[in-house]
Amino acid sequence: MDGAPVVVHRPRGSGGRRVTVRGQIIGLAHSDRDLVEFLRQSGLDEMTAEDMVAGDSVMIEWRGGRPHLYEAA
Image (tube, rainbow, N blue to C red):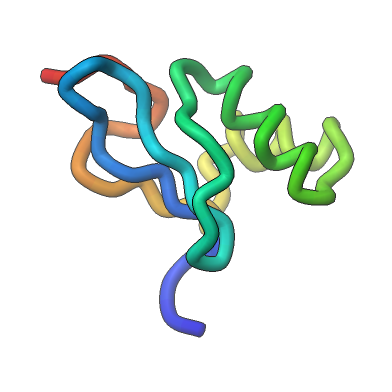
């Protein structure tokens, strides 16, 4: 598989960012807390998910916008 398994797509016009894990849409995040919850629901324990998001893990690819920003420009 090419690229990171978790992709946080560009902010939508109405706010929020679509999140995919291995190509499957898992939700629309409006905050890092939402992203952590989606990762937890995908099978990661909460501590690992929090560390991935806070630490800007190479496992997460932020597309079309700055990491951790969820509002449309």
